Image (cartoon, helix red, strand yellow):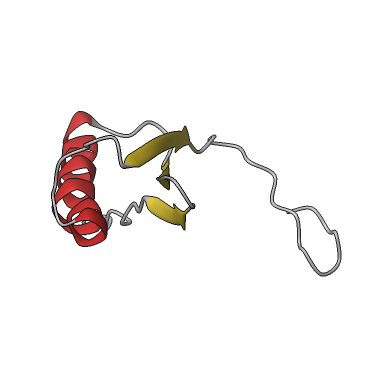
Length: 83
């Protein structure tokens, strides 16, 4: 039986500042070209269009991309325990 491929998700955080809106995008480790194309399309057609009324980057949006590391250390915010 074939092993089911787990879904990979990008996280998009939106901060509406007084002068500019910032999108911080965190992608999974080693995103493929296809994944980045799907992400770009979704950001432009759904998120940016919803925020500005246009799907173009007209200078009203700042984008920050982060790549998740394969071996990250997670910290429990209530106990400080490392995972």
